Image (tube, rainbow, N blue to C red):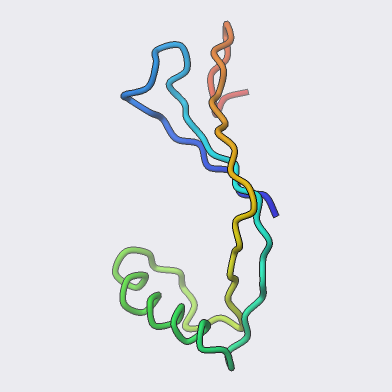
Length: 86
């Protein structure tokens, strides 16, 4: 599984103000009978309910990600290129 994160970096160089990371991961599906699932559920109840309203009372599983590789992905400056627009 590959996760990509891109954000606008106000402290970055003018030529490429968009920074990013690519994480290559292995994902594990965690079922409710695992202690990690209970930990994630408790963490979601403590933090997630105030910050993010997800609209669901509970989930049938959780995911645990094992990061295998991290790559820096900086959006290169190109004439006429505006991230997020086509």
